[in-house]
Every structure is written in C-alpha cells, then in structure tokens.
Image (cartoon, rainbow, N blue to C red; front, side, top):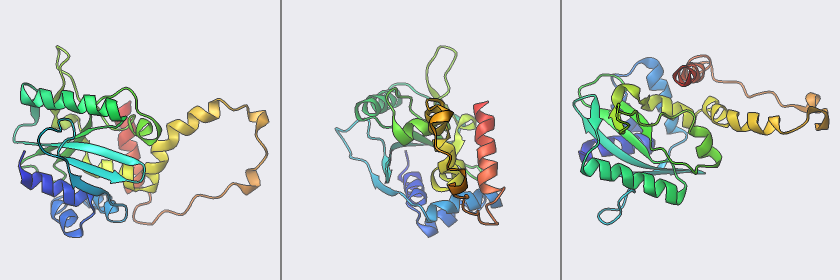
Amino acid sequence: MSSQYERELRQVLAGVPSGVEGVIRSCSPIEKERMRLVLNRPFLVVRAAGSGMEGTGDLLALRGDLCFPIEVKSTKADKLYLSGRTKDQYDAMVSEGERCHLMPLYAHRLKGVRGDSWRIFRVETSNLSGRLRQLEKWIPAFPKTRNGSNYLNWEDGMPLNQLIALLCSTAGAEAASLAGLTARSATVSPSALPDTAPDVPQPAALSPVLRGRTQTNVLAELARRRS
C-alpha cells in the first residue's frame, strides 16, 4: 500500500481542509458537500503500530464512542482477491475485531478514477454492540467468491462520501440509531408510556443546502443498497 494514499485518507478523516479539498476536486457537488461534513466532525487519525502488531490495520480513526482500525488498499483493477499475505492480514483483522469488539474497515482506493475513488468495506465480526452494532447494517461487508472466499470489489463498496455523511451528519446519526430505537420500542407496551406528546421537541431545522440533498439522498442510497 502506497503511503501516498494512506496519507490522503488520513487527511480526509482528520478533517484537514487542504486534504479534503484536494480529494474532492473531481467530485460532484453533492459528493463535495458530503465530504466537507467531516470538517465539523473530524476524527483523530493515527498510524497503526508497525511490525509485530498484525490486525491493527494501517490507520486508527477515533471519535467519541467510535473506533475503526482501517486497512488501506490501492489498486488499478477494481477487484482484489485475498491470498497469502493479504489473506493473513484479513484474518488478523477479524481476530482483533473479535478480541476488542471493534469493526475493522478496509478502504479500497481505485487509481485513475474521477470523483470519489474510495470505497469502504467492513470486516465481519460477531460481537459488536452499541453504535457499531447499529452501523453494521449500513456498511457493506466483503463480497464473496463462488467458493465462499472474501475479496474486494470496488463496485460493491460504500463510497467514502456516503460513509462520512453517515458518520458526520444529523441524518446519519438518526439512521444509525433507527434500528436500536425500533427494537427498544417493540419491548415497551404503549399503555405503559406517559402522554408526553405536547412536550416532544421538534427536530432542528436542516440547512437549506443539505436539506433533501446530502442527508435524504445518502439515506435513500443506503436503503437501496440494503434492499
């Protein structure tokens, strides 16, 4: 993996203005708006430990209750099949994700593509909880070959601008918690709830630029991918 692309992703997730603007030069207006959301809600991004620490990925992105080990891959072809060293890396990411209850991510950078050239995949683990458990429903896992092996297919990943919208916008936060709210409400009897309708706060107004574009569009796209 070229350190150039690792640095590119690190600057975007960290909300470095020059890094974000450099990546979005050839993006569509909506992609640019989504990517710029990270400027207001950046991550602390550090390079992962080196030798002797398999499974930590290349980068570690942290913010609040979120923590993502990220393995960065860059290719000229849209598919990357895991074998040998890359298969060992994936298995180590699964192991560390299970051990630490994390959701490791792969960031696949396709060279020579205009627009958003990054696609995001999650490493499947079985013991996520809290916010990560809710995000699991939106971020695609690795596709599988006919014999059941994991591989990267750039076309199947989540565009980076959609991931940022999911993690950094109001609509994204609402979408990530929707499943949890639905599950909790199903366990409570309606007759046991107090009548608090007059006191329910109204949702905050969305900015004119993002209303119906950044937030609605990304959630519609995510819902389409889940269907």
